[in-house]
Length: 450
Image 1: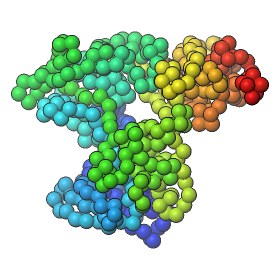
Image 2: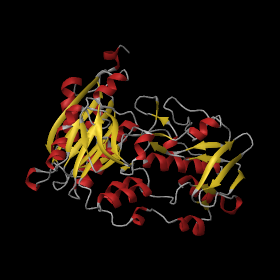
Image 3: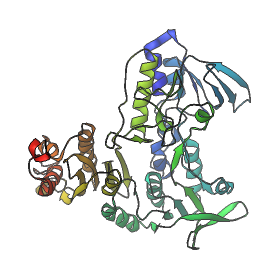
Image 4: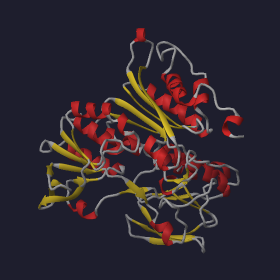
C-alpha cells in the first residue's frame, strides 16, 4: 500500500492504480496480533492503520479484496486473477507491476489438518487464535518456535492465565537477536511468568485424536501435551508466482532487487517481505522481513514508477521485541555471526543503570560488537526493563549505517538528563571497555602499514 499510495500521489489522474489482495484487509499491523490474542488490543479493527475506504475514496486507488493473482505474464504486461468471493476470473493489463506478496509461515501442511493447530500470520489467524484461547476448555497451549512471534504470543497467552510451553529447536530464545551470553534475563523472566521452556529440541510431528492434536512429539521421543498449538517456527518469502514468471530470485530465496526496487524484469518491482536487499554491515545480500524496511521499499518503488528518483540502500538489521516485561533490541551482527562473515570480533558486555542512581530506573544489559582489526562497529544488543535499551540500539544502528567505529561511538554527543540516563551513558561506557582492546585512539595510517 505504500507503493500504491506514493505512485498515486505523484501521478494523480494520469494513472490507474490497482491493488490485488487475496485477504480481507489492507494496511494492517500484523506485529500487533500477539497483543490481540492476549486481549490487550480490544478489537481486530484496532490493528488497521487505514480502512480500505481511505484508499478507494480518498486516494483514488482501486482495491480488489479477496482477489488472488494466479499467473503473471511479464512479457505481455498482464496478470490473471480470480475472485475468491465470486469465482470470477479475468486478465488485467499493466504498465508497471509491484510484487508485494510477502511471506508465508514455514509449517508442515499435515499439521494444519488438526483444527486446534494455528499459525499467526494474518488478522484472520489472530481472530481464530483468540477465539480458541479464551475458551474455558483450553488450559494448555504449546507454542512451537521461540523467535519474535513465538515469544510475544507466549507472553500474551500466559497473561490470560493459560499454561504455556515454548518448544524451540535452538538453545535459547530469540537466538536470531541475542548472543548466548545475553539470553539469561529473558529466560528467567519467562519461567517466572509460568512459561515452560523446552529448548534445543525439534518437533518431529503432532499426534492427534480425531481432528484434534493432543501432543507434540520431540526429536528425543518425548511428548508435550496441549489443548491448542501455535506454530511460530519462522517464515519464508512467498516468491512462487515470481519464480514461475521467470523473475530472478536472489541467494536468499526472495526476489532479487536493485536499490531502486527493480527486479530482473523490466517494469516489475518487488517490495516488502518478498524482496531481498543489501546488508550494509556485511555487504552481502539479505532477506529482512520487517515493516520499517517494507514501507520504505514501497515508497521507493512508487516514487520511481511515477518518474521520480529514490533509492533504498539496504538494512543493518535492527529489530525490537517485548519479552515478558523486558524490552529487547538488536542491530547488526552478533559475535559468532560476525566471525562467520570473516570479521575478527571483539565485544563489550556490561550491566548498568538506565538513569542516574538517585533517579531510580531499571538495569540494562548492553553488548556492543566491533571488529578488532579496524575498530568498525558491527552490532549491538540490549535487554532492559525500560525502553531506553531500544533507543541505545538505534544509536548504534545509525552509526552502522555510516560504517562508524568504536571511537565514533565514544565521541557521539549523547544527550544527558538524570531522569533519562547516567552522565556516563552505557553506550559511552561500552566504547571505553572496547578501548581496552583497541586503544583509546584510532590507529594512525602508518600503524596499519599505510
